[in-house]
Length: 119
Image (cartoon, rainbow, N blue to C red):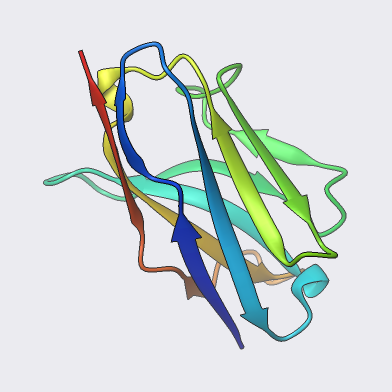
């Protein structure tokens, strides 16, 4: 198993930037692909970005492509989401997730961190 703890959320003005971090503990971090998701009240959880175990491949939702960057440091058991050009519609609780390589899904989730973008 792996435990995930997000940090870095907060309040920012539209056009600003934030960097979210996710610290993982437990089983070998490099055996997981990592992702970020977000949820706003009354909506389904939305995929944001994912990165493979070696950081050689990333994938983004169209809504954040070109503005957000996912990265990972396997030596430090961390994954980051650099968010730039933030918009009010990016306001959500952001969740870090881990999925066993080859499983096709994410099995482990953090508790979430709130991001609020004011207009």
